[in-house]
Image 1: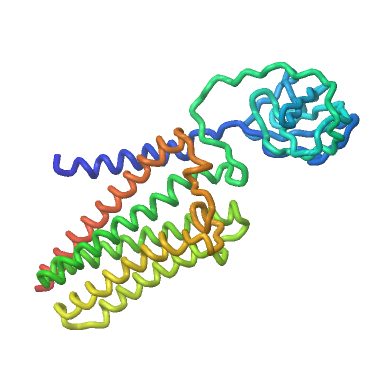
Image 2 (image 1 turned 60 degrees about the vertical axis):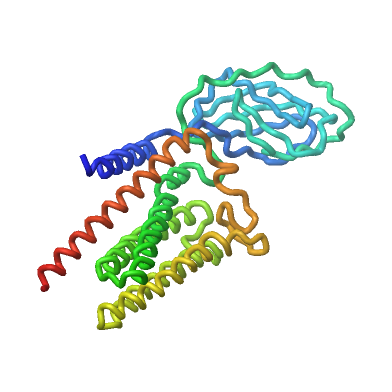
Length: 330
């Protein structure tokens, strides 16, 4: 069972991919109209996602310690309802939350009140719905949050493969072995495959959340430059005829290429002085801080391990095929 890790990689990858695509998002409130109300009778239309609104829903406005219950609720369908409120003049002029049963839309609208006290009764308590295994429903991300299990593992796998490549290159400088040079080249080639996949999945995610496939973002530009640096590594290898000279020159270049990878992907984007839309960069909170929860983590970590193992398997196959080809040429 020396190949157990290959079966583990395939199993984790299949499990994580199916789960990432099939597990539903948690219900959430995503839109209210209008988004600004004044004292008096007001109708508010509320839109939900993956919700199942009923006529008995408890709808209320929450402004710090103040609460106003809906006087009537009209359900249009499972994800749309209209609630009527008698907004008192004592409502504070502030951002106000809207809640439907146990779902809360924080800062959904602005209330123009006098803040002189509120006379409406406190609304009844709501009880949370039975817990179920769902992915978090985050504003802007919505269904695109599933891409976390594909986009991020691609980059982890690329970094592991480039790490293997630079390790083999360091060994080349110590023993001048062409076999280690071959392993370094194959690791870089497979790493570039995952780099391209990471750029493609990132561009699709950017289109869904930022409105464009590519923006002038330091993280995106750094990832593209990193890919070009490793393309130049392969070009360098093809420009030197002598095998041992090529191995040593490529090894030296590979070490500097990996240092630039770390610089462009991890150091420069995290500088607070540089603006960035990407989570965890340019002073932004990381995805792990705001958007992940235990349900996402339970699929994300197996996905990362699965993609890394499959990437290492691809690397192993490529090295073995290259060695066979070299033996046939002799």
